[in-house]
Length: 316
Ligand code: Q46
Ligand code: ZN
Ligand code: ZN
Image (tube, rainbow, N blue to C red; front, side, top):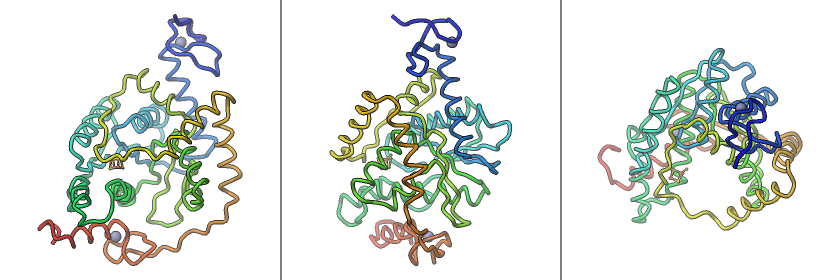
């Protein structure tokens, strides 16, 4: 039995702790949109920016991101979506379908970049890894590919920021893992806005950084968004440490309301700014010309290693 919406008095849809009462579907969506807007303004995520590329995976977080950005900012910012078709059986078809449905519904211009057009798919890389002739696991290839292709597209098309759907729970879990494992370089990048300090690396912004997993999930239901629920066949089982940390963060929040926001605030205002990590010296990849810490960037190195397995003519 739910109560009435504390704002408009119509049928309540979900309980919201901050209101100590229920909100209807409509007011729940507005409540979440206001939270994102507050985060964007407080963190200055869109200061001086008027062309933003939204990275769309087909999953819940990036779909919420696209809808909320479109509602709040399309009057002053040129927004477009980008989806990378990774060539993963079942998973990629379902992701593409959701992304297309969403972009139609909210009238967001969207581009789909196919990894296959660069000579390989994640399935092919995964098959060669399984056979032992290629040494990078699928998720490591996939992470590099997504980062590289999204940045390349944004840079070539003149976007001033790339918006990604990372939420509060993602960022706190990554940071806890980094603290435990001592990965200070990775920790230093977990800010709401990440400027890479190179003209060919487009800044990344995370407008959902104050929303929890539960909040983005509820928003997709309230707004009835098309979201792909297909599981990636290459997803490894979660590391024990990762799942325990994730459960512990939720359990502390239940006992101490506001803990996650406190953690995020100290991370962004004190911990990360006090880390003395110099920016890596970047040069240009001798193959593609994009920034790289070595002679060849990691994307081109993946292509070279796949080519060296000799498995496909199209690489030659
Ligand atoms: S899509 Fe790619 Fe994930 Fe699949 S191969 Fe791994 S990283 S699990 S989000
Ligand atoms: Zn209401
Ligand atoms: Zn390169």
